[in-house]
Amino acid sequence: MRVQVTFQINAETGEVEIFQVDDMGRTRQLSDHDAIHEDIALAIAQVIDPRADVSEVIAPPGQAATAPRIPAAPASQRQAQELDQGGSA
Amino acid sequence: MCNPRKITARATRKIAEAWRAAIQRTARASGSVTGRASLTQQLGSMLAEPARRAFEQAVAADPNWQLVGEGYVLGVPGGQARYLPGTGELDISVELSAYVEAEGTASRVLEGTVEETYEASAQARYYADGYGGRTRDVAQQEARTLAQQEADRRAEAGAGRARQKAERKAQDALAADSSVAADAERDAQARLAVERERRGEELNREAEALLERVQRESLRGVWQTVALGYQNALVAYARANGGHDISVSRSGGSIQVQFQMEA
Image 1 (cartoon, each protein chain N blue to C red):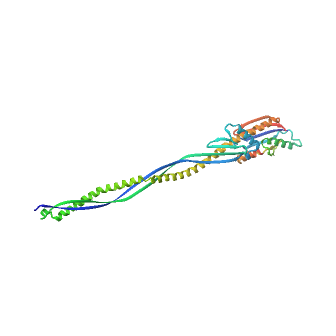
Image 2 (cartoon, rainbow over the protein chains, first blue to last red):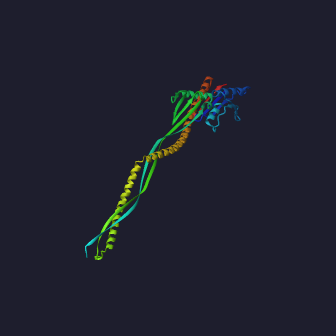
Image 3 (cartoon, chains in turn blue, brown):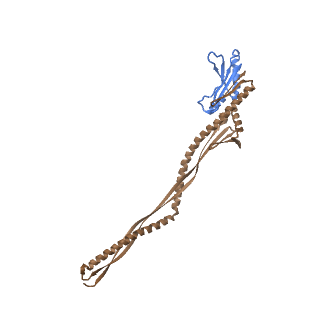
């Protein structure tokens, strides 16, 4: 499975804006695909925070991939929470 | 007509002249007043462990942060920020000072009345036979009138002098009275205390506002350091795990890291 990792952080506020691990779509037929995808997403997320958790985002129709996403902190939250949540995503 | 005779009359005039003497003393007092504000931010609990490590490494390497005792100190406008790696606490304190002064006054008034009597005498001639209408009664009346006029003139001239003399004496007494200056000094100190209180509260509010700005600026530095730490950690991870097409880009205030890898 090949994945595309996208991480974006606002360096002014500490908000993690995007933290996403996309399946490039080549190994969707693997029976343990979801588990592998989640494992790699979690491993990458834990680079940022050992307490990280992941959630799955279903791709729009026409795209085969699902993209585990590490929740970014909502912009409306305070900086401390933003970074903490972003870091613990 | 026989030889003229003289008759002498005396007159007195009493005066009661009011006088007033006043003195005012001014004193100035000055000093400084300080407004303070501080806060403690628990960075240790705000930041995830890798971010905290990245921040602490950046702080240790940044010459702007000086290691003092168990913490790192950074000068900020009006104060300092101090980070304690042991507890993960970021203390920020600011202090604003101002010079204040006040003027105090005290006054004394002395009043009184000076009483004096002025005397005058006058003569007039008459004839025993009343020649030319100059009878004794006429002469006596004339002498009385002249004496009274002279007494009045003397009283008028003397009243001013008496009043001035009484006022000078009172003024000298007031000038020698050190309690007036002492009262002025006390008044100045009391006004200074009020001014200190007022300006102190103002400075505290200004310090709070400054603290907010300093906190925002200080934290901005923290977030930049943390963002850089995340960026470096992800790039290092990608390189160590066969990642390719690694890119780091900046847009506005954001840093984006992208790479691909095989799972």
